[in-house]
Image: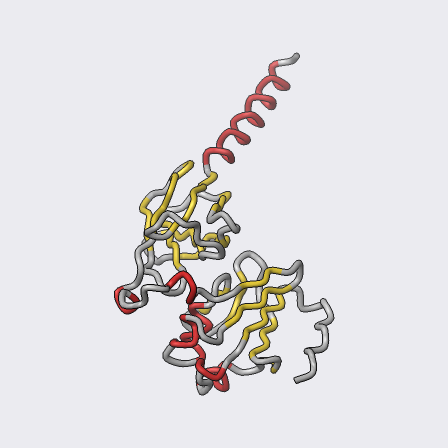
Length: 205
């Protein structure tokens, strides 16, 4: 092997090792050590909290992020946000505490929104869950697992760009109309993260 080939091989190996070293993983659980599926995990860069990437936890509460970051933010409706500074490698078990506003809810596990994750869309049940107690429609969307709402109320799905959103089988075209919605009157949110996919007709009411 020539010196040039050897240097190239070493560079490739170092690049692979650095990429692996940047992976951040962990498992998100509640205070009873039960996994929290669909918790939102976001990697940010300081000092301006720039979004670097994000994922949602799987059914066992596990996640892997293939990026280095300054700060990791973990959130799920009904729980206090969890922050991890300078996260690296496997973070192990990350326990989340019930939000102070929900401490009186002894059945919080039953109040979690029901989430159905399909290849091209996610359906989130709102009725009789913690999402239905949101202040308004915008607040509800901000708490919806896997959905990000920025300071200008623009919607995006983690890692998949802008979605199409249906609320109670009605497509959302303006965030102004969402703001005026009463979350207690909402049954479900459907988030289509593949806009080219045809939406099935809703069942007859």
